[in-house]
Length: 488
Image (cartoon, rainbow, N blue to C red; front, top):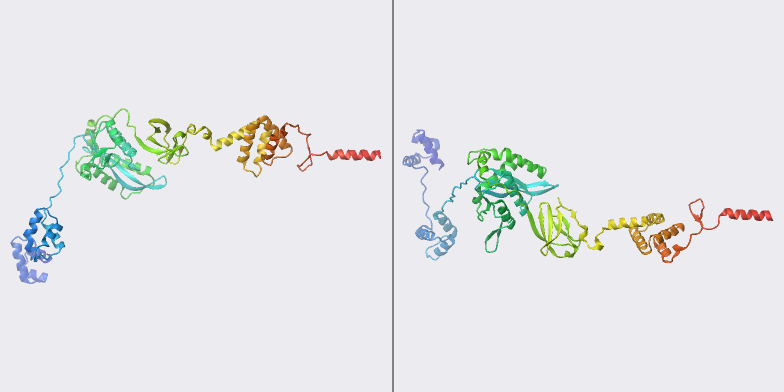
């Protein structure tokens, strides 16, 4: 092929045959042969046909190809022929050359203003979210007539995220198209075992609320929603390729600027018009938004844990204790969480933001469990102190000791409940008087033995070192000795 093209180029320049042969280093007879074919209209050198083992069976192979047989079937049939001696690979190549394939042909789709909006998801990679890199998805809703599009970044493709993005898309357009065409994601379309498709209940309710008709794309047919498929590729390449972001908020702010300053104001490659200009016409054909936006809710069955809570999306919400161990139906909206059991509402909470939060109604616990350990501790301390100043002093004394304070406090509270505040006050005064503050054991013996009813002896003296002496004062003994000396 190289020699043929070189000869043709030099011949067109007007060189003689011998000059061409000398320059190319080939025989002049070869040059004459090529020039003869060039003059006859040839564009490439004539190739000699190489004989093939399949040549005698060419008509038979062509007939079987017309019947629609595969290369494997044709090879199996040819092996029954007595003179056939060719490999399956040879048959496969010949069948491939003979088989006529029809080119894929698509109808050019045209849409009237506000006739249809197409929606789909695409992935834009991992972006830091709360200090951790997470997979982020790009939601796109495109109005088919004007190519005016709404873009949003979401963290998942669950029902709530999907429906919320659709609702915000309608609000961005300021109206609703006649029809929306989603992909076959589970948040929109359910497929049962008989391959019958049904719309997801919440998605269908949203469409009915906004007065639009759902029309899902056919399975494995991306050309049914070519407008939004093209917009996803355009956004991923133009807005995100080669860019990095420090947070999801930064990426969302960048996407909003790109949407309003580039995507929707560019000259579109097909319409040769700006989407924002065509949208001004399409806007007038959109249906009016309803007075109230659609309330997005997720439903699910959750088991009530032993701590009277259900675990929903990383947070804990309390449920009345009678439902512990059973499964309850939970409805989660953007603002509230409602729990249903046996068809009735049994709990309602404000939805927690983020993860790891406890939302608890103390009335959901049984009477004996409604107070936390901290609250029980606080109330015990308050009750002992209110019994009197001696009780408060005794409580302070045992707190300084080596005993477990919580245990001692609990025993002190039980003594208060059993004997009453006046008895406890007198018992604590007696224990403090005699220095019996080695825990609540001495106090129990005082109360159980009725010693708190006995009067205390006179006030003991101090030895100067802080210790107490429960005998007579030494000054009295000195006076007695002086009197004895005088008498003698």
